[in-house]
Amino acid sequence: MGYSIDPISDNCYPGTTVLINKLDIRDEQTLNEAETLATYINASKLEEQPLEGAFDFAHYKAIHHFLFSDVYDWAGQIRTVNISKKGTRFCPAEEIEDRAVLIFDRLREQGYFHGLSHDTFTDELVDFYCATNDLHPFREGNGRTQRAFLSQLIRSSGYDIHWSEMDTDLLMIATIQAANGVTDLLKDVLDKGIVTSA
Image (cartoon, rainbow, N blue to C red):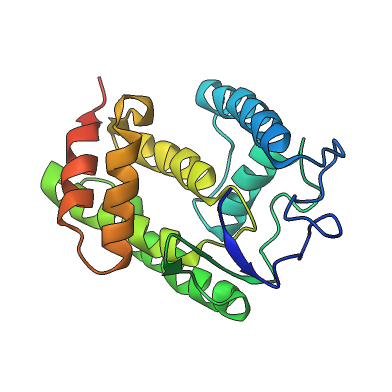
């Protein structure tokens, strides 16, 4: 988890930073393990049978709901508190809806990146990755939702990506750098991970 939030206790059991969950787990490490298992299973299902949608914000939220609804009642709902992680402050909660409209309208106007050369596709993907990372619309589970959504988007565009083969630490460093305006490493990491579909 690892988010710094305001207020710290929002959506948490009293006196803790453990998110209220359907499993009534009150220990953060145990919750992390249960959440990881549940979302791994659901992400595997998405790999086999992608969630139908129009690659809009509703689709993005539906993927979060699919991944996390076994654990949290608020799966698929946008957060109501401001959050930050590793020094990165994400979109203020009250701006999420308006900013999401801009991000997903631009994706539609770009034709969902269909028909682009590898280099142009990577550039557009980096921009979209940075925009959705800054949006961080959910209380928890933003990265997993982003990767699941991007997997479907990338495949619909004639490319493929294998997140499991990426160096997760390098991707995290690249994401933090990109949040601070330096996208070179992120572009390099994604560029190496994107392949043309067979």
